[in-house]
Length: 434
Image (cartoon, rainbow, N blue to C red; front, side, top):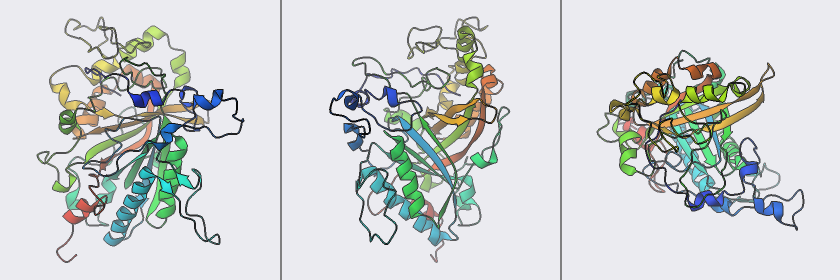
């Protein structure tokens, strides 16, 4: 699903230029950040590790909000959902504190401690003895199930956080749904995300149990200095996220994404945001046999440019005012259903941050590919759920099938070294005796 974008998407940045050369390694290849430089270096050997300056890119860990929501999306992403094994609030507090310290290190990078060789090593070793940050962000959110009777959190549950229910076109696999805690990792390399996941699992064996996990990536584009940004394409070949609100606009993010003091949420939740995750299978073989004209009619956009039928470029705003019968843009086109361009629809805007996924071959011999859909909003019912209800029954459903995911609430950020993830939540629910 998606919404259409009225805003100027801005000019290409240095960050994008840094990604030049990653095209061959983009898409599904899980070999992280390769560089074109090494491919043309006559001194390079076939087994040499690819090299890249971008491995030293780092995002801030401390802040009112967690990184990884409005942070520009890098090429690789992962979502891992966990069940909490802690038996009491003390265990939950230890979980949050340990998670905080590990994320702070992983996003900063640094030396891995050397331990007694008679003991297991300190880490997996995937990234070597000195861990590079590689533009890693790790975003922690909590599911409705964490607010059951185990930890005394029920009274503090975010207002619209609930267990994800199936929509009409869903075929949800219970093994790929829900969870107490969700961790989103995104970086310049798939190996960096995997390193982070294994680090978290290794350091919290008695407190977290991995429930499901999905990796993804987006194609990296060649730099076009001075040109407008383009949204990354999904596995159906269309640009995804054209309608996103401008994540650089703080006021707009405060209106649509971040919970505010006047949002009607528990006080501890201010600075957080709702997260919807969906694993959406794409029937790519069927799609690839569908005529281009029909594909474009289903989406309501030109496939090559991403432009709406009433515009020339992706950032042009669709104009339905002179098309009441859908003769230009079909009334059931994806972009028209998701965002009918009414004043009321402005309240339903969501911030998408998806990745494409590929899980090999399904049991029927077809490619198991699709979209790891992730979006953020201030109000789950006003955002994702409202938009998805508008999309129910759309023609695109013939080519997609949601199979997993969940609803979560992203915890407020960690403001300094004395703070930790979940501190506000625990403080808000502490009894006078604790």
